[in-house]
Length: 434
Image 1 (cartoon, rainbow, N blue to C red):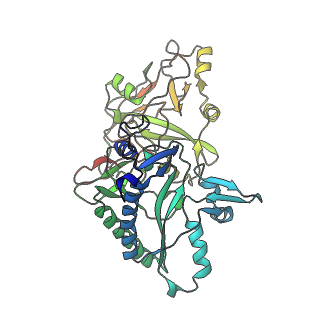
Image 2 (image 1 turned 120 degrees about the vertical axis):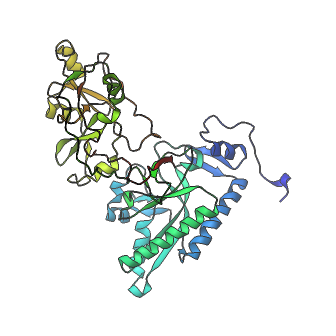
Image 3 (image 1 turned 60 degrees about the vertical axis):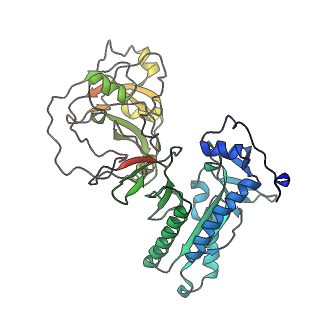
């Protein structure tokens, strides 16, 4: 086609809301145009590039023995209610009603639909294995869409679903898809890692995310350059030390730390390594408030907390009222009213839950004489922010009660609740964003 007949609208400057280089270049080149938050129109030049990527994906999937299909965008609620994901999937699910008042959803993924087809049409194990895939537009109502088409609410996705007669056959199908994905990413010239990941809302027992290593990435992953090991922070686990913990070298002490809001500040004040501090996180599980202890230089991970033995996966943040009830703590308002502070109580503990400051005289954060503890106002976060320190919430009053810190922690503290630590390898693994 002649250029004079081609729709090619370029921009001299990228819009101010463009976050990363790929988004700025695609907007300036006239490949995409923003329609709404997280929703983009693919213009002719962008669609040409998109179709080339799609062709690579289709060739490799067909070569791996998968069969292409096309499933409906609008799915009846009954299928998702049957699996329980109608309620579990959360606010990302776009729900709607038809004119008869029946519930439907815009499919963010299609396990329910394709399984319903197979259970009706597959009559014998001789018809297996079967692998169905599609390349289709999805919608997930992201709370904060960003990075252009990389983190949009509407996006094009290839999703495949395999069905096998037994576990061995399943693993062969899984490996075939793993190899196909490796070829796809290699053909596209991307620097990537196949990362062990949590199965999330889809469920199952094994999962890999193929993540491109990039400065604009949001996920923090752990990988070893001398081996094939790689995992995201939701899956990576630390190995407990093989040597016994050293005996305490100092007596237990209570130290006032007035005006210190974070573990970093407390560690700096006391001249201790951040790894020798402990933050406490209050949750509600098994019909009671429970405290999780996380090493000061680590951050808790919601996915890993849900996997802790005894919690059964069902937990939530403890409310301020629940924390006060079990710890007999005083809120900052009551602290001011009761004149509780450094003048009267030099051993006050400041515990924290999602930014709400609590004070108590009962020593909530005291662990043992071989552990160093300091409370923190940091909220529990899903993933580390590129390895940076957690952001501290501002106190709810201008007066900050003193903190409690317990000296004499060993070099290796207890196994943290989050277990967001690096696996043991011969060579220390690297961090990367993906």
